[in-house]
Image (cartoon, rainbow, N blue to C red; front, side, top):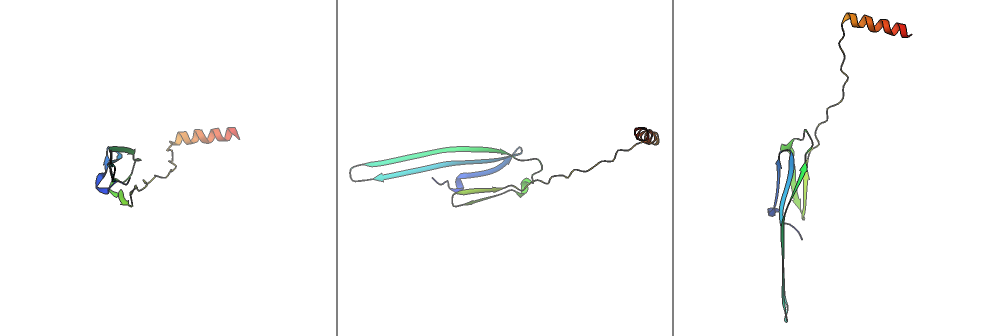
Length: 103
């Protein structure tokens, strides 16, 4: 059963990617001695948490041949860096004295 693109909705709410849709399927069979009709339908909704830092305005959704493809650009990850610890002159003397004692 293929879902039509007009029956799908892709949105972003509270840091989540939300996919909503509705499935509809009808089957009619008419033969000489009988008639058969099958109808199935149902709504669905899926929520996916987006990682911190995603640029939501760059999300894209593409539907082709019954497949919905949602592209979420990866967030930029900040690189680790060393932070220098500031010390006073007295602390430096204390540290230097302790390192000499240890040697």
